[in-house]
Structure formats: structure tokens, C-alpha cells
Length: 167
Image (tube, rainbow, N blue to C red):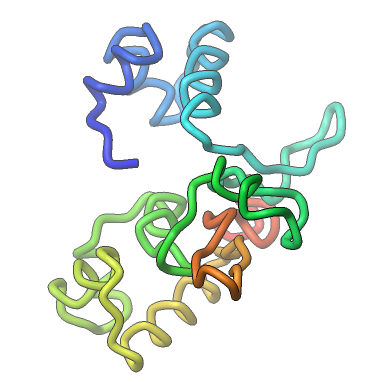
């Protein structure tokens, strides 16, 4: 989405301090969380997770909202965000709470390659290497492609299993 903390805080009508606390898993008022959820949902983000009352949320993540049916009309599809790439390495990195330099070092690729991949520029070998690395780290990529337009819907990431099981 490429928004600064200032933009998100202003758009969600919360303080930057509250946003920073929420982003670092520190306690915040329930209204703060609800305002953030509303802010992102209004911009087409869908939050993912499987939960049971009294249990930890499993397979948490986020993706761009998408039509429920890949056979939906083009008119329906046009009301959703479509991506040119099937995977979002930037979203995967955010889920893992890592910097680009961390990924580059851990995968064994130059920082410039990671930056390029996040901008959608593919190098077959590097793309596959980074994709496999994220999957081994517990990231599941979401989304599906439209063969008519060559676009991808529902692009995002989630944990394959519980986040705690990854640690």
C-alpha cells in the first residue's frame, strides 16, 4: 500500500503513538484496533485468520480483497484491486517483520536483487529462491490469476500455521 505511518494515523484518525504501539504488538485500546481495521478494509485489505473462542488465531495474514468466484464477470472483477504479479515479497517480508537487508543476507542474494523483486522485476533463479525461502519460513502466499486479463486477485500472505509454531 506504500503509506507512511503519518498517512495511516491520519487516515485512521488515531495518534502516531497509538499506531506505533499497535504495529509492535503493544496493548492499545480496542477502539484503536477497530479504527485501524476499518481504515485498511476501506482500502481493500482483507484480514485473514482462523479462530475459536478462547484460542489463538491461526493462519493470520492479510490480502487484497478478491471476488469469491474466479469465474466472476469482468465488471465484478473491475471493482477489486488486481496485481501484475502473483506474489508479494514485500508483504511476506512485512509478515516476518524483517528488513530487505535481512532477507538478502539470509537468502544469500544482493540487497539490490531483493529490492528489484519487491518492485515486481523477476529474475527466474532469484525469484524461485526467494519464494522457496519465504515458504520455508512459514509464509503462505494467497491469490489467484485471471487467464483473460493476466492479472492476479487476492494477492497477500498468511502464516501456514500458528505464528508461535514458527518460532
